[in-house]
Length: 282
View 1 (tube, one colour):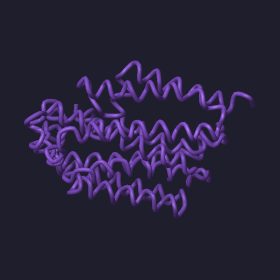
View 2 (cartoon, rainbow, N blue to C red; view 1 turned 135 degrees about the horizontal axis):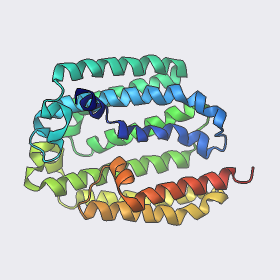
View 3 (cartoon, rainbow, N blue to C red; view 1 turned 120 degrees about the vertical axis):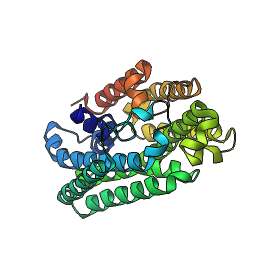
């Protein structure tokens, strides 16, 4: 049981976000089986670093999580793992992530350090401030994207950068909106920033950034004509996520992708269509 608790503490399912490192080479048309070996160390580096930040966040949130309906079952608030052991594991993982990042070059190393720095500040204080908390979460996606470009030597286009940035804001806002709706009057006891968002603000930001994502992505794929037919798939995915959030089914991006059938199919179809569009004629 202890082993399972430590695995849960790592939040392995959240490592899915680190696949963002592969976006630059995949969308850049240079992704080949031989590159997988080159991406192992950068991927493991970010997995270690991200798990360290999840553990730190759980340590900081342990008291609030203990009163949350589902989060009270997490290893630290449930007592399955002590704070001291969790802190030790956090330090080991952060150190491993930093040491591994050195093999990716100076710029990749810098991206990992910035990611850890923002994540620490977020866990300790910044998550209490509205808007800033959303930007901190979005920064994690952008840093993965830029780090992937650096690791594989692929420039990240302006339109791809904007699309990922706006999508990250969209998903982060949806997550916060779902928390605010689900927790109701108890929202402030769980996360201070939730009660500081005026009614309707998060809804408006989610709709605004959802529309903006569609615009930037469409412009991006017009530059890459073979991807134009993925736009309807993306529209469906955006609408499905909004539907899921507003229906109270959950707003966590990773959980939504893995547990929501339609969104999983959208992700799979998008990957297949992009892969075929870029590589199918080889």
